[in-house]
Length: 106
Image 1 (cartoon, rainbow, N blue to C red):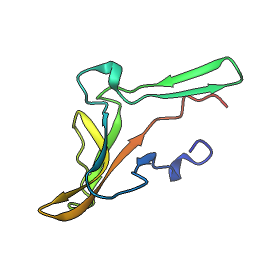
Image 2: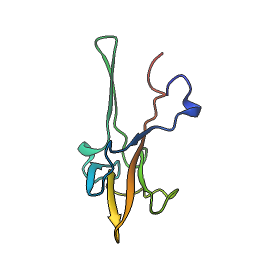
Image 3: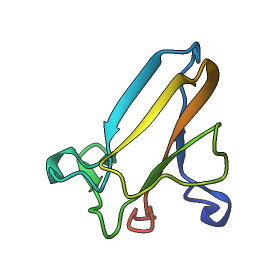
Image 4: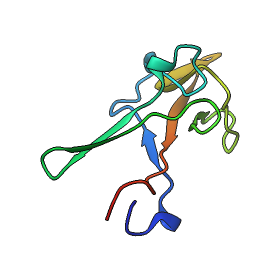
């Protein structure tokens, strides 16, 4: 992610077991409570720490689902990783996160 950012597309959250009726729900960067926005904490060289917690303007998170693939369902206060059904047809839900790592020192 740091060595080759042009080929990094962030993190994808996926359940290990995508049997229907399982879900994990997370607050997105659009959530009204800023304390719940996605956060990446990086600790390096024993005492140095970098905390990345973007707001709704800078945050890049969304979720997609297999029933409407290739369409981001962004601008939601939450994003999910789950497995559900729609009228009995199974679908997978994947959460997507991307952090700007350019502020990590060399």
